[in-house]
Length: 349
Image (cartoon, helix red, strand yellow):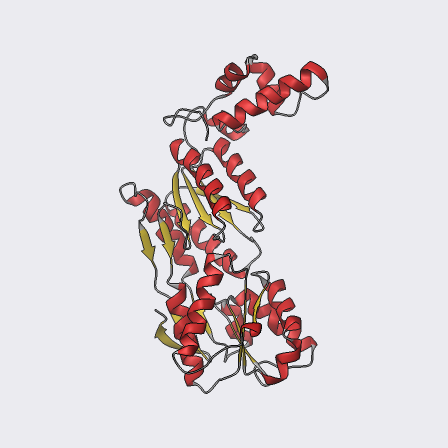
């Protein structure tokens, strides 16, 4: 845990005092100006350790703010190039602009160390709110470390909102992934499909896990069981869907549907199937989750769950700014819609 006061962010002077050096020396250390062996190296380590203990992050923008808060929101996503993330970012920017704010977007690449580093940088940037739209996991050590990072940011005055389900005790904006996936599975089974493979992200990712479990349960309700070996877990992105087709190589001839747990994964799966000489949906159907509009343009009969990605931004900022400060446990669940073979069939939950 850090040692700074919960009422204000740590300053450079605080760091210098704790490290036993002058403010100019602390500034040079934290801006890369002190290197070398002997006493200098020992001094550099004292200053850097003090900065970590106090939760201080150097930032020219923060210096310009001089104790206030920037008119910005810090948004953390897993993959800035992902179709779903791009749509959500656009919605977040639109909602922020309506409030006279701008959005600083950072991508973690689903890397825990990078995630921690970016959140440390956010301390110095002094955003009014931090929105986490990254893939949360069941890794208790990782999530505990993240919780400590968020606690520092909250104590410094930033509002924290999570997009997606998480065990962390912060307000959340999400959809019911289990229910939506189960509804899609039921509709596909009722359409006569019986032979399924499922491709999704790592099991420790909560969104991925919930979608897979909901989908498999929806099939079971209609008498369809999926061989566990036909559930492929890989990267939760386009490249993961592409790789999943190769993992299913021996099963492709006997499948009715490859159910991808994101539209990005569906794109990768479709691309690889076509390289193998298989047409979608003539030879095998591929379904998705999230609803990227361009897929519907290319595949008029595409089936997916429409997640209100643009609306996440407005909902997250409403929780952050327009309501009394929410404690842990506050959850806003947005409605998802179902699209089956190109036709909207109503609510997915």
